[in-house]
Image (cartoon, rainbow, N blue to C red; front, side):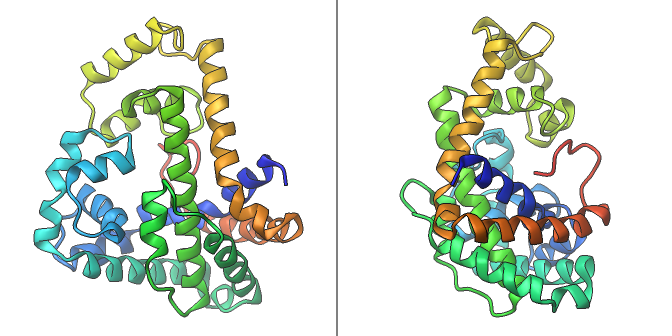
Length: 284
């Protein structure tokens, strides 16, 4: 299997997981556990599988958030709600959101059941070594309903790919903010101002990162990627695809093609519902 097929499978299905970060059901369910609205719900919701970890662990595994922003929410979150309660609320949010976005006919369809089975098999084929977020979610019990099996499987696959992406960023010698700046400069992620604010960096910190990257020949002074910068980002994406490939290699080309086909159809429904804000240039 080629590495581009691993990227195609991710692109075709990731929105079915990442909608959880944008739908109103998530904050409604998580604040119901006692968490404060806003970023605390994100940090606690995504890290709860690791247990009541400190802000340093969350900063390390999430990679591109300002440490002070994380520390404002973690570990306070665990004084307000247990990780188990947060995980249950997050799954309930996925259930409600997918039910609303896809509707009962699609939720109960053979396509959802088939995609759930395929992605579960792929997700279970991942290796945990050096992949803390994947390993933590892989330790969780599987839900019973096919659409929730699908969501959990895609969560595992997303974190498996994300853990590998951090390997690639480290190999490239990019800090968290440098990774964010260069990714925004590709035009394939968040708009720069949204990226800066959402990750908690001050304007002067962002400008200093741009200046540092320019000094290394990766950016121009106005924040545009140089040829070397474009090559580095391309290498990061290639490394990420290579590291994300094993679950899809296990599934095989034909069944991965089925994942891409069904995933695209379901993703079109979710995206058409307007889940993702305009500040997201590419679905995360």
